[in-house]
Length: 374
Image (cartoon, rainbow, N blue to C red; front, top):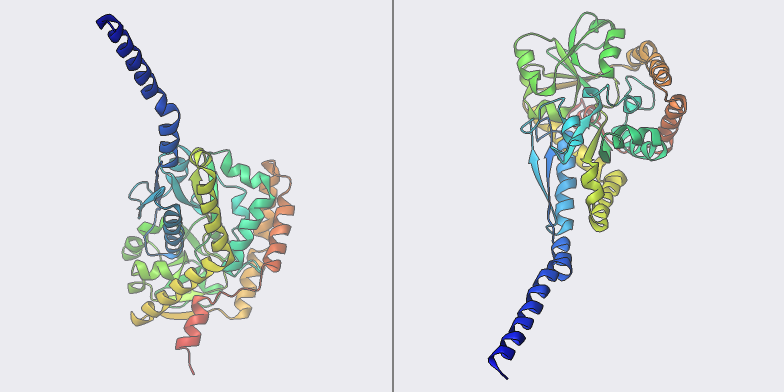
């Protein structure tokens, strides 16, 4: 074969090799890279790492990472390290944070329907484990509630709360009348309830509570669980913890940027949903209860004491606050075009009954059992 012929043959082979190299990313290598893709996510939390919902979420997301076998990696940002209180809604919506914790009380304009599961002194709505299960089921049944999040580019992974809401004072106030005129930290629906009881609600974000107490800006706290009291050493200033029958503290949602969710492969979505199911079916209750009981033990060591209003005082508060609180929400929602607001409340109440009984031993009950008079 002549030199010219050999040259043409070599040129042809080079052309074939180059073409093959260009096609590989479109087929074999491209498929491999998609299968091996690692999804890196930021979990953005406004509060301390050692508090009730943070402990639950840490378990859940650690479990997601483990089950994904390295395909999902989550980096945690605590105490507003990434975004401050009040900024997380927009951060998830806009993709600045992939996953975040949304406490309805801090986002009242954005979560009008969500506030329909946040009650003060509502009968039957005391137990945090039943309340958590109720929220997750209720959300599935009301597309209007789903739209509240999904229209803002958010996928709800699971609903949660902070356990029982408690008062904390320098001395115990054990009657409705004793609250009159007291400046009490609260937010959201709880602030309206305190007004009805003639107390003075003061809206202070959780990270600013300790310094506000030091400066004498407030006389006490509401919407504070025992884990947060322990984690932030609040017992140094307000060592008397009072169970007043208020109910559940801080109904909230853990959300993911929806565009990211939609982009996840089916197997990774399933991992999140499997973990969600485990939380609902008992893991949430186990983690929450264990953490709160540990918090009570540590608070007792630091000198904290626990008290509870008697049944007559709890009933008195209920009569003042309810059903006015629920009726006001229904009227507001009707005005905003949510015509199923009454049905929403009725179904929530029904689910609270159906999903009981509670197996959650609250902080006061645990305290009485372990440290009460024998």
